[in-house]
Image 1 (cartoon, one colour):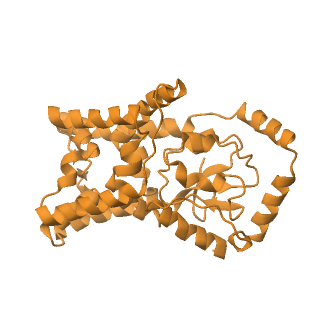
Image 2 (cartoon, one colour):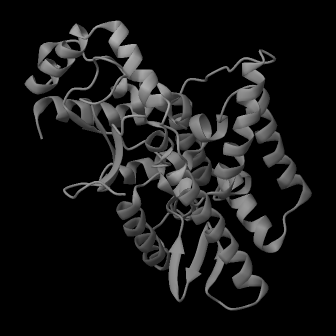
Image 3 (cartoon, one colour):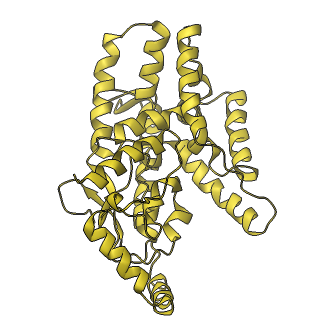
Length: 330
């Protein structure tokens, strides 16, 4: 890995913890081939560039990865419901803790909360935690949210209402400092230690919806989830997932070492900005802004949810899924 990419990698981890992305400023921040590419782009006639943008946009948008993701997410959650309803014992439990054909699966953040509350490592949890850890190392850390989490899907659907209201100028989006998520992670960890109770699990919309789908949920818990969605519609776009959910940080750490990632190739990019508009966590795509890519190919950081919206939207195919060391995914 070149020095610019190493610096980029460290910066991506800091961005995951809440640091705002910064534009590379020194020549040493770029590889030689990236610097040459940026210079060629600066020399391109603006009228020609705009014409190329519009030509590519005309045939751009598809929903291949989004549709795959929605099908996978709905299927995974329905499998819990069907297994319980018909007592077929294929996928038992809920997203926080389950068993798939005899294999124990325990959500990483839930296991951490339990062990902090009990103040010691619980051996029985390690097997299920290890299985899930390996699974999400392979499939991309925060991909857990966009491909499995039921709250994520509801928030994605209600986000369209928020964007429509913004477009009509009936509301304005009010971003929050992303460092708040790291603060929440620490606060809930501390509460587990102090109270000997998994406080976060009682308010986690992921767990609440998962249990409600399978076993039925309490009115108070569902009202809490509804309140979160209403807040996101009228005040802050994707507030819980972007700024509050401590599970996101836990799986983001896993995403640091995952081989599955979205890769950005700068040469064919016209910097339309369409990808950042649809991205669920747009700070991870700061590298696509004109003049910021430190190499010709840059992997998107661990805070990426691998949702595929940017891949679907990119009119030039400059964003692709790939497994590190292998060819891009179809």
